[in-house]
Image 1 (spheres, one colour):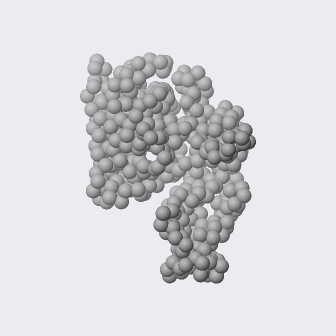
Image 2 (cartoon, rainbow, N blue to C red):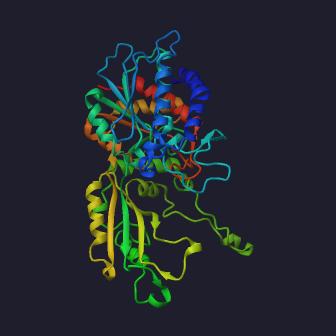
Length: 493
């Protein structure tokens, strides 16, 4: 099929209908439960689910001369105490039969606000500028359900035969998808035999071709607590006798990674990188070059005197080699401290030796490392033989295994190249992602024979989870018609 035939209807729907919807979606602080303990009372997750489900259902009534989304069934599912979930089931057209099924995945919950937004932007303040929609959640991942339905409706308007499509749009992905297994168990008999999983919650190396996600890292996290006193004491009296809890925490973190290189030490947190992934990283590195690391907002050296300005450089990454950088963020573990407690503000920091330090730890894992086992090992390493017999506790709050895609079928690889060439003039590119989507691992186990197309719009500078997050509107439109072509032409046998 010629994907350009889908472009007018898709572009029009994005401009007239979808962008205004996403603008309103950005305004809603629909934070994931991990960041909003009162999510149910606040009602924001229910609001975005109701809005998206209502919009999707309304598309079936826009039927013109040809049936559009005929037979669509869409439901908002709820289990007491758990976040809501959208499920849709759309029968096949053109006599293809409903045994050939595509499963579409996305989510509507969001990360929290984060500081550092540009003065005229904000997480809940939608701004369209330079072809980008700024604000929290539209790219991660509110656009997914809208793009999927726009692609399906465009196929139906052109009377292009397509297989049965089902979809799951959850609202706790940013919390590790704890509620999703319960919905998968409930929906299992209704999903049928899934031949292709289409996940729209991932990244892209540039905005100039299709990027296929080949792997996702796992993630374990929790709170490391170090306590040595019952109460704070005068630092002039106690320092040198009583160890600082912050220094003890530093010693404990040194058990995890090399402070000079960031290399995670324990074998339990490392894995061999498959040869195919090494080859794909080399190809992606050749395409992206320094953009792999230049996409990040490194701090510029602005504090030096004017006389020394030439010697003052921006901060540098761990490695400037593009291939190594890709492998670092996709197949190697990395430890981050993402939060802290028991530290007074600068204004309130007196000369006191603090009794306790708590650090929030986040350890990214290679795709093939078992998250639960790694979490147990992290707790053991941190708690065994504490320095100065301090009271040390690690309380895990997150353990998710990564995902390594099954080998791609040659026919699907050829189709993805063809669709990318038609859409962008460039073939598809393949690269792992450093983030975690627990749903992919769950589905991989449930549908071991399925093929996967995991992709998304989170490209350079889009800054998901951080300040100034944006959706690249031109790329989102192009990806919409590309996935329409894949849905229509994929062999699901």
